[in-house]
Amino acid sequence: MAETMYEAPGIGLAATQVDVHKRVVVIDVSEDKSELRVFVNPELDNCLGLAVGEEGCLSVPGIYDKVERAERVTVRYLDLDGKARVLEADGLLAVCIQHEIDHLNGKVFVDHLSQLKQTRIRNKLAKQARVTA
Ligand code: GNR
Ligand code: NI
Image (cartoon, rainbow, N blue to C red; front, top):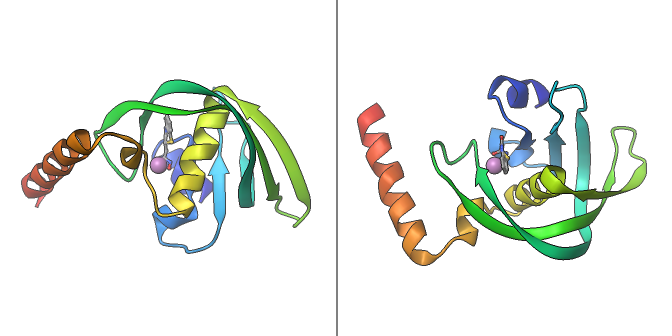
């Protein structure tokens, strides 16, 4: 999964996106791609504040928009050794954690946008699909 994420290139990937139906997420928000994080069974615990940031998604190519999310989150998860861990995150890492947990729950960032925007995005993606077909 980490390989798929780096090749995309992306800063995060949920197992759901590569048709693996397990609650696993990989994230690397570092500049030099040296801080791979693996979250097994991640659960958001404590969410604080709100922040708006531009998001994109490998599963919704070519679409970018602003999404409002918690500014600071506490996430509980298991590491690769199955050890329970807790992480507090803010900034891009917090955004990415929320984005990836959404994927595990069958949601994409577009679900956070208005109905009008969702309709426009759907039409745009349908058009793109016709062009590449
Ligand atoms: O590569 C990605 N960049 C990104 C930028 C802002 C907010 C979220 C993301 S996640 C995305 C990769 C992806 O779609 N993961 O599910
Ligand atoms: Ni995504």
